[in-house]
Length: 126
Figure 1 (cartoon, rainbow, N blue to C red):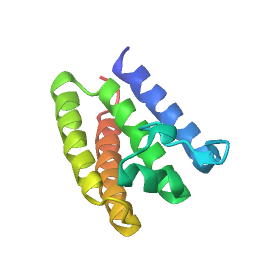
Figure 2 (figure 1 turned 120 degrees about the vertical axis):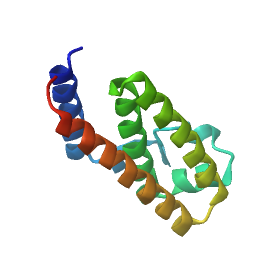
Figure 3 (figure 1 turned 90 degrees about the vertical axis):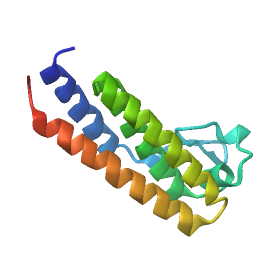
């Protein structure tokens, strides 16, 4: 896919995610997190994310942005993105069930992913 088409696709996905109420992703009485199955959540951070709509929404946005960037960044950038994500997941895990810690971890990761998005979008068609 050409750079222009990737950016157009990326913008379309981000736009549609922005219009979709992320909190509406519910199955029964359990929220559906994007990065893992809430029905199988056992780790304290995952349980807390599934129980809190605000954390769940951040998880959905983080995962969506990560997956899009993973698919459109060049190989070196994609590898670095994955390494950073693995480190971030360890950081998130260290929060255990602490909501404030989890919110801070998500906000920091989302700032980073949003900045990568912005930088990628500035490159324009090639």
